[in-house]
Image 1 (spheres, rainbow, N blue to C red):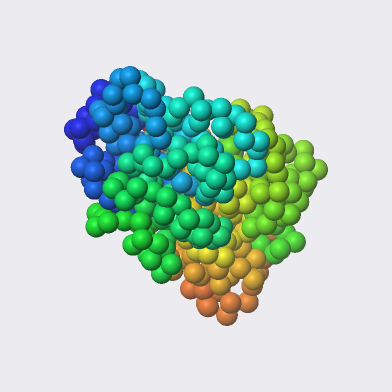
Image 2 (cartoon, rainbow, N blue to C red):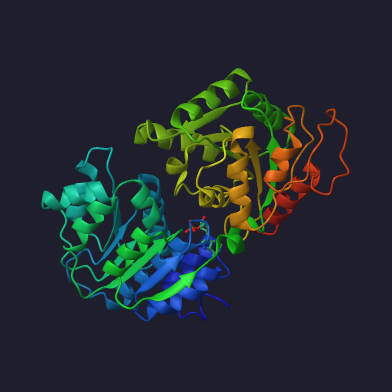
Length: 425
Ligand code: AMP
């Protein structure tokens, strides 16, 4: 299957070629024909699946084919997404895929002054990517009108719910023209999200890209049993001993993220943190350093990490296990993006054992235990049995285990490098 076979027009094919996309991902193969047909879509999928291109390409194609040369630009497509990072990434995607179409987009989000955003709006755009708060604000001020919207995308709906944006979304909906194509994406479908989707969509086509199909299976995962106190030492140990190129470390809290950076700093490892307490400018700077390779470790909270586009990530480390099992899949999905495979390490202290059990239930696999580390935390056998894991005995560091569940680090790195050599993004 190629993008050409999906009926994509030449100016977009050329841009996709420049991006190095040779084959549509599963969600693109399923969604593009539906969207080119102007049907509504309910997509149960997460970032890392190629979801952005799945909706951006058909919208660009419609706008390009319907464009009247001398007509002033009006906002015809609106994409609403929960975080600034995600909004910027989606805006970049529209720009990249649409660079030979003449279709213009801009991005509006809060936390920064509005001047540059309102200037771009005044110059005229066809596509607007926005976070909910700033969008409503600029609408109230009269900079944005939604009366010409033909394409509406609500992205990461479950995250909107978590972040308390549902009320804002409902306010928006009443301003949208009723005749439109609507797309609704969510990684999970709890009842309030199903209810919201019914308010937005007509009679939608449905696509589900299951997490285990997209990420969990192709990522080399392992879990490290370690005490809370042992976690900083284990992190430093791994970063110093493993061959890691670019590492995203997940912390459950903002404060925890800053603490991790301090620990790494003391150990002489360059790292930066992104989380909600940092200004947009500070986050972009940290991200820039990471992308340029000046720092090899980025520490992030779940919300801040959403939507940041990190193609070359070799490892994800779950310093803390998430409370919501789906978040684990989101997190490790940062390393196995599109067709590349990746490596994910998870630290698990005794209190986190039930969280591990929930994750394993969701992904329907036992995550192999890595016991080849000096900070192995021995737990009572009964505890291990409760989480359906084989009892592990601590071993002196350096002594190789014959356990089939303990992985050779060398193999892991070879696998990652192999996938990158093969041109995977
Ligand atoms: P998304 O799920 O939209 O966040 O996309 C995940 C990553 O996959 C992004 O870095 C995209 O650049 C990349 N990507 C999207 N579609 C393709 C494709 N067809 N081939 C290769 N990479 C892709």
